[in-house]
Image (cartoon, rainbow, N blue to C red; front, side, top):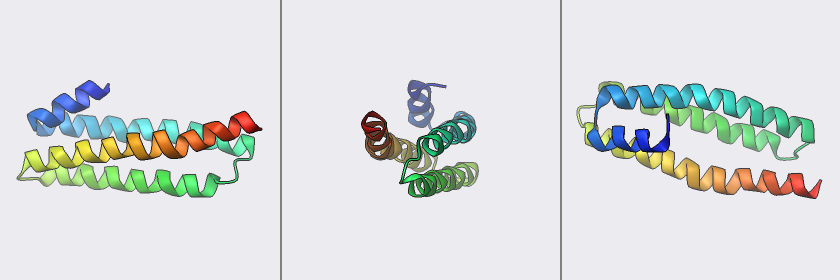
Amino acid sequence: MRLDALLAATAQGDRSAMETTVNFLLDYVETHFAAEEALMMECGYPDLDLHRELHGEFRQDLAAMEREIHVADNMAGAANNLAGLTAAWLIDHILGDDQTFARSLGEG
């Protein structure tokens, strides 16, 4: 599943495609977060606990999004929420928090 598939699913407001996308994201973040947190632990990253909390919040947001999509009458609104959640995560977390960790690896 790529970002373009997510955007297509949200643009179409297709409930089934959006559910598939959220389920993919839920599975993906479990694998990705576990690997990232293991690396942080191995490197002794001092903000690991905070980073775990951020990961937990995103998991909760995705789970809430899954529930919203399942019952939404307004698929366009649910699609906007999913797109916004994903975009915010990409910008704020990956380009912010994860880059802070990456820089710390270069300093170690």
